[in-house]
Amino acid sequence: MLPAFAANPAAQLTGGGLPMDFGRVGRDGARLLGDGKTWRGLLGGVLGGLLVGGLQVAVAASADNPSAVPTFDPGGGKASAASLFVVFALALGALLGDAVKSYAKRRLGKGRGAKFQLADQYDFVLGAWVLTAAVFPAWFRENFSVEAMVVVVAVTFFLHRGVSVLGHRMGLKAEPW
Ligand code: CTP
Ligand code: MG
Image: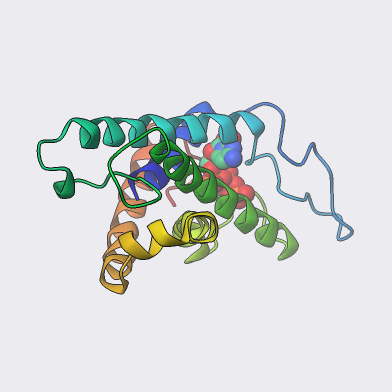
């Protein structure tokens, strides 16, 4: 999950400029996604995820005991260049999940940054899982048992709170959620 976890704060650090919806509004008069979803954030978020996941792949490639660390290899083998595609899917999925959530928020009349309980916490987890399960089903089944998913859901809850408060104090986030 680390590449997916890294994508969000990386988007926050790099975001700004041209919005992904190019400023367009829906039939309901609200923005499609809003100014909180930008191309720079998408690119920076994916690169942040690739940086973290790339480090993990490098560690796995040089590990004495390869079974001790995740290799991200789509076929369940040793860490390889193909591993980076899985990492890419995790990071991109996280950001797409986040964008889908923004779309839903705008349709519900919630403004940028408005609180959307549960969706704010789990959008990127769901997005990362859906995209990797769709593109790399074998890898997904191998790496995400029900137990692992329960742990991710629990860890995400606390991680999200901690990172949001930190981002708020650092002045990167308008709201502490
Ligand atoms: N961000 C970005 N591009 C993305 C995702 C995030 O530029 N694809 C940046 C934006 O500066 C955004 C910040 O990261 O304001 C925090 O992200 P998030 O909390 O997801 O956005 P919000 O501003 O809260 O907007 P929304 O209500 O649409 O979630
Ligand atoms: Mg937000």
